[in-house]
Length: 182
Image (tube, rainbow, N blue to C red):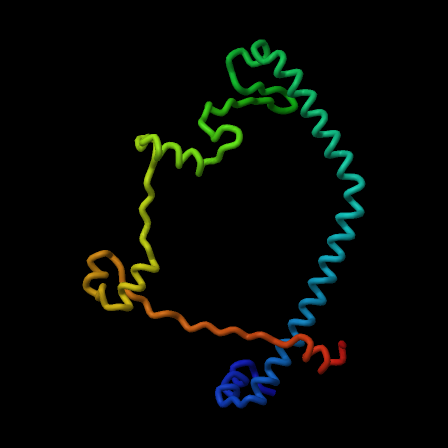
C-alpha cells in the first residue's frame, strides 16, 4: 500500500481520469463532512431549544433585577457614592460612568449631510483629510512603465509577482449519484 507522499508522486504523472478519480474522492469526503456538520447543527439547535425555555425567564428576571437596582441607586447616587463612581460591597460592585458630551448629526441628518454643509459653509477647520495609497493607480502606473523599480523603491514600494491560486470544486450531484445517495 502506498503512503500519501507516494500517491502525490504518482499524481505528478496525471491524466484526466486520475484527476476525475481524485475529484470523486474529495467529493465523497465533502459529502461526509456536510452530513456530519448538518448533524452537529441539528443537535445544537435541539439543545438550544431545550434550554431556551429555562434560560429566557431567568434572563428576564436578571434584567428586571438590574433595572430595579439601577433605578434605586440612581435616585440615591449622591448619598451612596459620595463623589466616587464605584460602590464596592460584600456581594459585588455598582458603578456608573458618564460619557462626555459629543457631537452627532441632528435628527433627519447624517454625517454625509453634515460634511456637505461644512464644506459649503467653508468650515474646513472641522474637517479632516485622510490620505492613503491608491493601489489601483500604482499598479496601473507600474504596469504601464510609468513607475520603474527604482522609482517604486524610492517610495518604499516594489512590484511583487502575483501568486498562482487553485480552486478545486467538486460536483456534489455527480458524486451523490456515483455513491448511490440520489
